Length: 50
Image 1 (cartoon, one colour):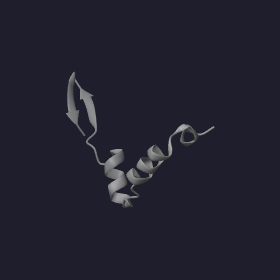
Image 2 (cartoon, rainbow, N blue to C red):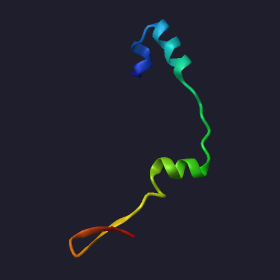
Image 3 (cartoon, rainbow, N blue to C red):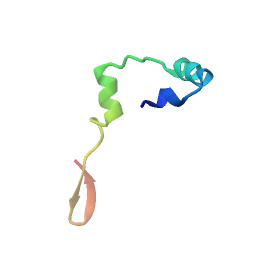
């Protein structure tokens, strides 16, 4: 049984109106996933950026 089966027709219409299909580029996906974030390392107790 799916979640949609238990909803009223009005609620299903609202859900379908909310659905927005966005196309993201590879660069945008990398930013979303945090590929380009700084990396940190401990050196003598201090945290430093690599």
